[in-house]
Image 1 (cartoon, rainbow, N blue to C red):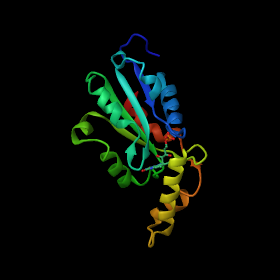
Image 2 (cartoon, protein in one colour):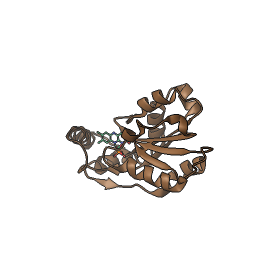
Image 3 (tube, rainbow, N blue to C red):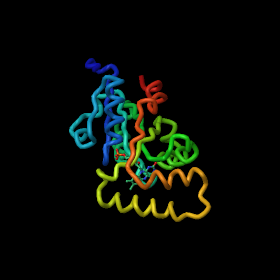
Image 4 (cartoon, rainbow, N blue to C red):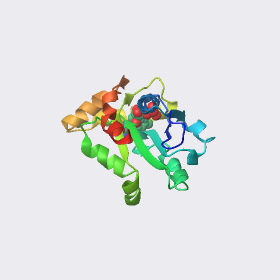
Amino acid sequence: MDSNNTNRKVVVYTSETGFTKKYAGWIAEDLKCEVMDIKDWRNQKPADYQTVIYGGGFYAGSIKGLKKIKEQMKAYPDVKLIVFATGATPAESKEIIQGAMDANFTAEEKKNIPAFYFQSGLNYEKMSLKYKIMMKMFAGMMKKKADKTPEEQAMAEMLTHSYDYCKKENMKEFLEYSE
Ligand SMILES: Cc1cc2nc3c(=O)[nH]c(=O)nc-3n(C[C@H](O)[C@H](O)[C@H](O)COP(=O)(O)O)c2cc1C
């Protein structure tokens, strides 16, 4: 860890079912920096850091916890904020991902906050009841949908079970930017 404060980085995450936490741990390992849950971040002083890397999962199009951290970091314009989001959308669905990312940032924020997407998976065992019900409803809708594109057909099948597609390779572009 860089303790002289010249380039102190921290990875902060919100993770409901563990995927974002896994990526956060990998990033911290690679960048040799601290990593902490958003709950522990509340006791920290953002001004002690040069870079805050925030990660959250996509939940019905919104990156979990992003609004709050963006709001908090407005008071620290000298601290760089970098965002990563995890999701079940396949990495190849670039337009869908771009659209989802765009919806989470204003035009002004896009200029200042680099944002990256890492494909993850689904974990029904760790999902809260509320999320399990939402997911089952969405999976049911996708299954019933007529004239599915091959992309939608693949998605409909993926939604029926737990899987983990997290790979360190997915972070390549992000690490090239952040190192
Ligand atoms: C209720 C619910 C809604 C979701 N919505 C999306 C979504 O809009 N886009 C997407 O790509 N993935 C979606 N996912 C998948 C999650 O983003 C994915 O599992 C993520 O990695 C979860 O991160 P976490 O376990 O760290 O919270 C959703 C999952 C659940 C349970």
